[in-house]
Image (cartoon, rainbow, N blue to C red; front, side, top):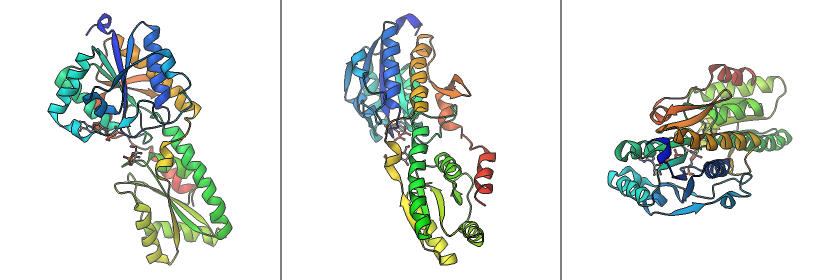
Length: 327
Ligand code: ADP
Ligand code: F6P
């Protein structure tokens, strides 16, 4: 579709919500209105798309939200969207509402759905990386990641106070689905004695070794950070494995969904605002089926397929650093 034919654009949030999604919605709306486009919001992710939960968005619709976590459009999970006939219904609804293009703010799952809408029904879509996991190929950071890391770090600093007061061992589990980005950044920033991530597993024996090394130099409390990995509750498995090997009793703290909330940091607000405005520009230039991300300081387009089919590596030097600084 040439630039001139996009008159109405829709914006949605999907999958796990993340701090900064509202800033992205705001930027999409304000940029669209500034170039004469109409904007519709889709509530509840793909579930709202199949139920035509659409609403007009004006400048005032997105006032006073840049500082708010969560998403005013809500972000649903909608397993039905895996069915082609459901996606066809969604595409029909977009056409009936005279929506010419879509901005999808979400993670890899949302992008899989968006790519299918593009392939099966020619929907013009640009994805924005809205997830705390930071696991999307094509962007240095995802919207919400910086806030989630700082939230988890604040929690770990608090846990360290009580660990030091009672000479205790804590295992703190952080989110990230199957990636260890949050864990490794929080581990380094929080001074963890060990970091467990799916990308570079360490064994409970190695963790016990680290703890004992610290004890040998008088360090009687330790904080271990564990990515939730494939199964939430991994931290309990680790605590039991450490207990069996050493007799050390570890307290477990699963941070869970507090990492998804809170007011977005400046970095997330600026990232979300840049990408949200750029999404409109890219669509008007005729680009679609891409995710916009930040690489170094530049907004760069990556094919949607690559964002979820290419694995984004954690820098090896950062993983090595997390071990060195802990010793
Ligand atoms: P995220 O986008 O944060 O990764 P999910 O993995 O839950 O979150 O995906 C969000 C939504 O995207 C799902 O609820 C579903 O509606 C849609 N979705 C996910 N994976 C697919 C897929 N393979 N095909 C079609 N739709 C999908
Ligand atoms: O993808 C974001 C995320 O927070 C993951 O880190 C986590 O594993 C998952 O969502 C939790 O999903 P839900 O909010 O559906 O429990």
